[in-house]
Image (cartoon, rainbow, N blue to C red; front, side, top):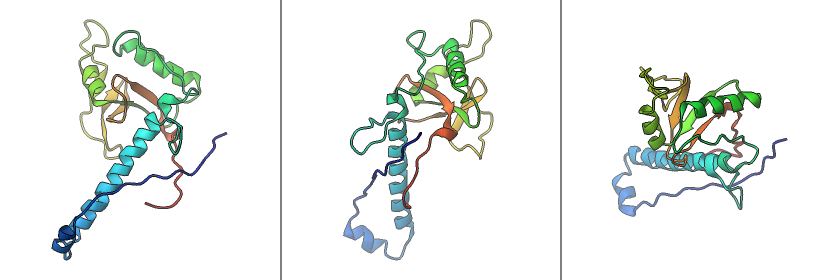
Length: 175
């Protein structure tokens, strides 16, 4: 059972009277300001979905949810066996369907670009996409054939894998 509770998120961008006067005939400044507000709210939603504490007005994020299975790393960084363990854990929980993707911070992505799958194969855990997929904006590469995304809202040295179609934000109202 999933419980939905309304929460509030807000953003603000201070603007000067001079800016309003100078841009009165131009809608470009207004659109830039709107896009800035939307972008800041999107970043905060990502942060809350990943790291939310679940206290006050903040939802419980994946990293703090005891119902989300966790795989301990076999060393100080991600190894190929960790990737296989993560995928197995998702499958054991009957969630290996729909939009399976990896999510990591940019530092971890950089590390995985230079971490070999094994000795001698020349293959790395992270592989850059040969071309960008317009249906998956933000995807920069793959891990074991699954699209991967990098975000600064993910804690450093964390690697998340799962069915992202199951992550839901029920919106009340319109931005």
